[in-house]
Image (cartoon, rainbow, N blue to C red; front, side):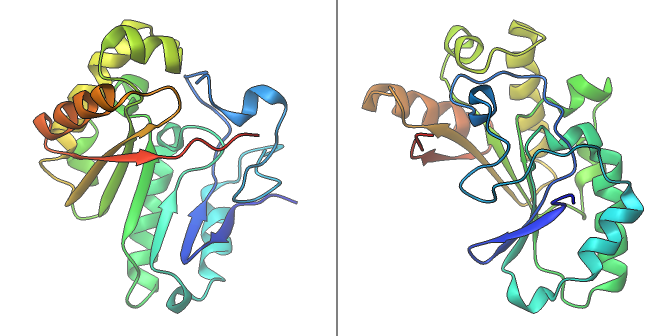
Length: 205
């Protein structure tokens, strides 16, 4: 059985892929986990089709949720076309659909080889983008992206462009081993891109 969607707090989370182009040092996946504090069975034996995901999502009662969050155990924007298709269908079929957010590493333009940010306009209400460092060297050391330093530039560019079309853009860092000065540097960087900064508490496995 696949966990396509699950409730955590007052939000509905959507899990479409295991794929990721990063190997972040704090990620639970590296310790053999197939779930997280949110749900214990997030590892997908296969990716659901968009139709399967839509059927799962249409079975939900959206009066119970404050927001819909596309995240998953991988990088959700690998399936950006499917996410946008799902959002379009949900907006058509669900009265008063709650705001839609994507939790992402900000590499969508790198992954798809094009600027996808215009496609987010009017569909995605919020983005949460993993920053994880105030410098390229720190970012690459923590996130260990397949594209190396190019991933840093791609993430910054994506954030800057997305902030022009998505109402709420937030960048996040995990507070593990971060000094107050480093957190301040991350905040200044986020604000320079048109985003705000959220500091997340490190959750040990």
